[in-house]
Length: 102
Image 1 (cartoon, rainbow, N blue to C red):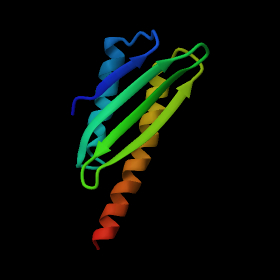
Image 2 (cartoon, rainbow, N blue to C red):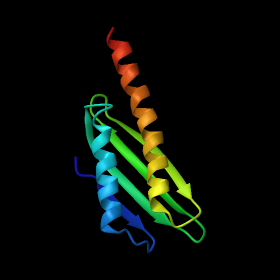
Image 3 (cartoon, rainbow, N blue to C red):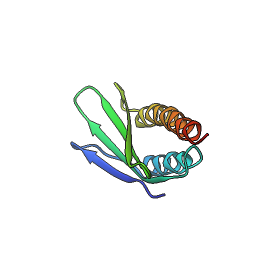
Image 4 (cartoon, one colour):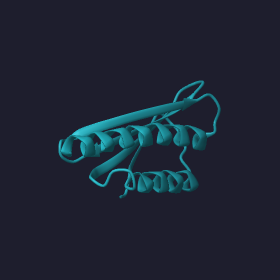
């Protein structure tokens, strides 16, 4: 799955960071197989950089959102934190769907 990467405010996103985001979004398919798309929004403010994952899933159409912020310039740290949060949400969502079917 190819993620949609949006950048708000003048923030520089390197190719290495884009690859890291793409790998993280690809891993999300392991936790729930009905993901339609993944959007990653990167926003740079004066003192912090925030990353937000928006994952849309099929049936029923839902959007799961997780975000993380870091006070330094380390964008990888914020991406990893947001990824861990969306991973937990997807696991819970998957468990609810499986539990509901039984």
